[in-house]
Length: 422
Image (cartoon, rainbow, N blue to C red; front, side, top):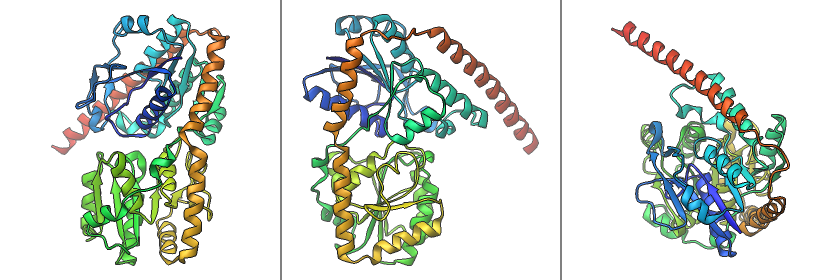
């Protein structure tokens, strides 16, 4: 089968969408399918003949994202040769619009994965007004309604989409992970590199260091815990715009010797980092699926997390970790302390349950579900519903007008503040 993956983020960028697209692409290719990826340019990107790179704005608005610049006709020759059976879009904006046009022109089914709760990411745009969140949701739902099927990475996302009266069929297909990859790792090596004693209690976190990850809360809870347990340590794997701020926070709390920033890790290095942890802590409320949670559990690491979409499907309270239903620093700290006090028998039980949970999220199972969907849509070949792209174009024009209005207001307010200062 010829599958066209279209995404605004891809390797070497690190993030949930990138990991999902890369994982599915690799497994689908392993099973003999021809997968072509359309993605933005990135510095130091590995050359792949089946990855078409589109010009992009690097480090958009201070983030680690590249923003694709859609170019009409840029893909024409390659697509005529490739002849996709399925167009799979991973974003509604930018390259997503191109995916829509390709699907329509080639009479090919369009699948769209709702990876992102976009209203949680409006801080990356110049104007973060409450109404902008509403517009972004409306636009993403509008795009979803143009797809033949929408994939929700978790039941939480499926319920959210249903609550927004989305018209397209919904299939729940989590990304899945290669659980065997995480079963063994050299945690002692990571501890030694950080001067962490072999028997010390270590909490850990893996993810982008970005505002939408609720890291202010997590760092405050971790600091509170570390002050209560002077022999404990905290490992942070990842990079992003908040890295300097977080480092300064822990320095101010005199914890720089027990908080270890390992930066961007890949492959065996990140697996080793998981195996250096006694517990994985997570506070994001913007996820559509808990990919790093399943990775941690595959490595035998129980999880403490805030209840949220994509999290509650993975963390089973008192079974493979702890699920907190309120965002309370004291409660989060208390649960971390409980883990420190646990008997070896209790920890062993949680570890076994964590590994068992991860086995329910294997990549092969997820790819099997995805292929069944692809095959069904391929047989239908052309959408049974009439796709009216004029609705999508009008929606984009409406958002653009509102965007311009908000941008002008934001600029005027900024000018007024500067004049008042002087």
